[in-house]
Length: 578
Image (tube, rainbow, N blue to C red; front, side, top):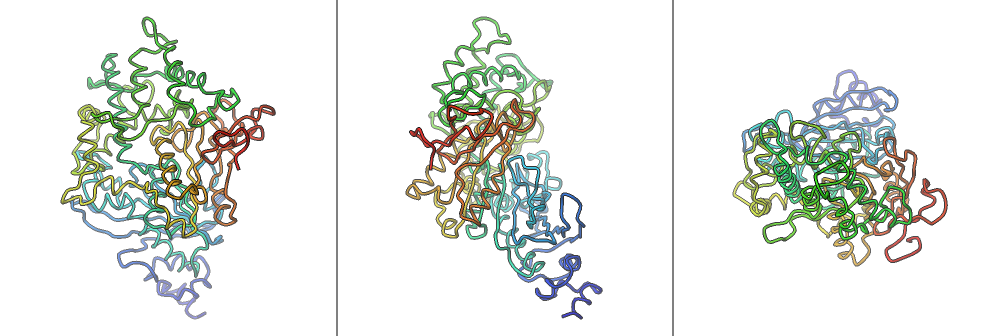
């Protein structure tokens, strides 16, 4: 064995080295070995491209960084594809594996540091986790055809769509675990998947398609209804375009300028109306609508009506067209029969203003774009406008990746036809975009039998994926599990929070530790402590995030800035939930 270790280090023969020898060799030698030969358990179409040693450099520990590929191929559209993965193996391992979810259209390798979500600055790697990330089977730099949606042009290839939807997740998990077994001499004791947005969809897909692979999953703001949400984005854009045309707000190309339909002050008026209608429902007028779900359109509508200008538009009022467009957006997309295509949205103070200084997670940044911008830059247009025709229509539709082309496309979308397109199959796309992408099955029995636990945290003011859609899924899950879904899945709404982070609320929280304690210690989380970060009106304020359907309510006494003065109260109850 000792002679083998010397040969491994000197001659670079570690690729075929027995697992025990690998475990006994210095970690630097084990790292070099990963790129030098066959690895037990690694599929024939998977490979390690590089393995580099990184010495400890605060706050990151010493670790081995691995980059590799799986399933290299030429697609039906003539483009070159492969699944790229990025793995970091700490020398001082805590025997835990962390899969870091992606985002948006993916196509980015990811840093494999282990984003813990909840605006946490610490990463999983610094806690001793082995961490992997991946690009989901396409590369935004290589698979980018401007005339076919740019980075979403992979949607013209069925296998690339399938990898993006879920298939790459299983391949990367198997590859990463094989490398862990080789490097450490054994499997992880616990495995976790953590992501938000598309990463949240990936977490849901993991529980649905690969229920035995992970012990704990955090699927925040899950895009598990992505094709329907893409229809909602076009619906929103069409509503704001009509308003822009009526108000004669156009860009340099003569196209409706969504950015100019609402100023930040206008959105602030709407936030104020929501607070007047709903702020006190949780027992405290504190700028946060803590009574999640109780702030209904019926409550808000009278306050919006009071904002209507009696004469010309000015800074203290909204035009009738503005209120009509906003109500249309909040009501959710409908087809020509008046039936819901997606779902409606919750009223929350976080839908107004420009929280985060124009951050792409913010409400206005998604729905209409940056205040004062001369060209359309809203992510509903730039991301949703490319995703719907290329990734979620069968067959795909060629739309150039320019603001002008995307606005023109959205203007011409027939909602009925586009709705049919997400469910259609063709000879080239034998499974519809909806059936590929949707990960909202109410049957999670296999994940539950495995002993899996899931946490979902989502902003009430999320402008991308409606919290109502997530709660609809949870109700179906709870019904299928005869009222016991909370035994393995818990939803934590975050008042004021936008998409994954940001917004006027207590948006900094450590849900991952709560998940880990649930998995490893059996401590099911009833509350998660959350703090308002800098940039909010109340930095340092704390609140409890409550496991749905309980919501936070002020006890009627004590410091209003402290979570200790609030209790999680179940529906139709005056006392704390159990």
